[in-house]
Length: 165
Image (cartoon, rainbow, N blue to C red; front, side, top):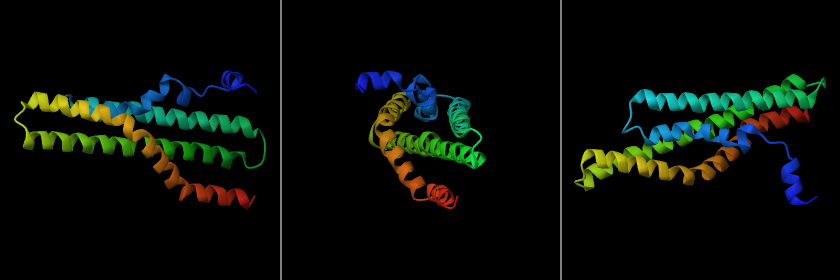
């Protein structure tokens, strides 16, 4: 099949293939702006990212339910789809990148305060720019790391259960 035809005939996953995916990065943006905005804005950005993660997990559960119809083990397969998606997304989209951007920004603000005579507002905006510019560089390594972590832990449990059926 022609690669162009294959792409157009492929089902679009709204949570992975559209602009909706960027909602999963809301907390990283919130962390980058932490020095400039009220804490409620940062917590709100985590709420947006968490809703995205939950919606993706529910969507994958619904798709697994449809794919498995009335076959034996349907409930387990749906649960695995939901749990795997939720854990992966929570780690790769919210927890690890949020912590990473938080620490990059905190270190940047601290270092700028110790090594420059820039006024505080300039240091805060610089910190925000550093945090925002860091986001594209951390996504792939974190995704790969979370894949490795889950493959080495809970996905082994899923695979063992499948072998015993």
